Amino acid sequence: MDKNQTLREIPKVDALLDDPAIREVMESRDRSRITELIRTRLERLRGEMLAADDEDAARELLKNLVPSVAEDIEEFYAYHLRPVINATGTILHTNLGRAPVSAEYAGRLTEILTGYSNLEYNLETGARGQRYDHFEKWLCQLTGAESGFAVNNNAASVILILSTLAKGKEVIVSRGELVEIGGQFRIPDVMELSGAELVEVGTTNKTRIEDYENAITERTALLLKVHTSNYQIVGFSESVGTEELAALGKKYNIPTAEDLGSGAFVDLREYGLGHEPMVQESVKAGIDIVCFSGDKLLGGPQAGLIVGGAEYIDLMKKNPLTRALRIGKYTAAALEALLGEYLTGATDEIPILRMLSKTTEETRADAEELCRMLEASGAKAEFSVKQVESQVGGGAMPMERILSSAVTVRPLELSAAEFERRTRRLETPIIVRISGDEILLDVRTVRRTDFSVIAEELSRI
Image (cartoon, rainbow, N blue to C red; front, top):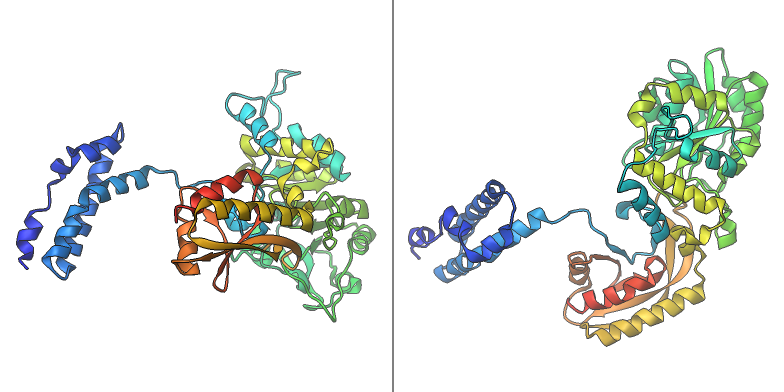
């Protein structure tokens, strides 16, 4: 094969820019950027042609050049953050954006975000206001706290609490609660970043109230409790309750704080799950400051909510670090909308609570409906319905499982692994579970309005 002759047939950049198929996808896009994409594709093509086994293979690569360039352009300008269908059964899926929101909630956000708003403007006085004012009253009403506000996530909440109340001083925490909160962020690291000095008490599996009391010194600034929401210690174990810790703090006039992690406003036992500490319970127990996430069990946007005594919240609001950690108008509007749903009792509108409340019978009926639609779609696979277990979330109640139903997909012409790979590359990506040689579509986390989309998309594989 004369490789040099074949390479000479590769068109110039200008020729490709003038090709009708490429001009069609160029539209009003930046010509210099597209020129760079073409040059990158041509370099790749030269390498592939040189590595080709024969001239026919090299010419086939050359023949596909224009479609490949057009695909490069479309891919470069395509939005990378896209909606996907979560058929994994994991309700609070960190990789898939955790808590989805309702259409009503999203509508409220659209109304606020598409124009100007009174984010930091007091309409009564005409003076500057605070972005926290829009939801603080509702937050306090729901939790029973004196005051509250929000920062951009719960790790930021912990940093701000420690930086404000314990910088350069000691914070006592149980060894059994020195958790890693995900992404390799660990409570000891967060404490070090805040400038607080960690004092560990107890053991991994057992910590008693006297362990805290014996560790108190004149340098003790805070007693901290961390809810181990992402793992459990079972068997020979013991931990200090919130009421005990709150009482100890009041005895020595030392503030107490609790990081609830996931956070919850409703009793999850109503959904057949184990008890998850509620924010209201910690406030009622006398804990001075409580922080928790907005996008986990609460079902809202990413945020770190902090509630507690007004004297402590006011100090945190005045901390210069708050400026770096503050929420934007998107989160402020989202929190107000979410808390409004809780306040009016419209919790059935909150998607994660609706998913949690689905009965086994409801999931079975949904799975059977989806199965019928898939069978009628002409997709090249066998379908059936089976009982499975859904998961609440990896970082929130990871041990909790809920009986659910799934449609099993057994591809006729592909392996399960290849089928799964292709579901991720559909126009509307479908994220599934693999079990042996089967694909599972757990309907607990799939909206009924998405059933027709799934049927249409899978028929293309």
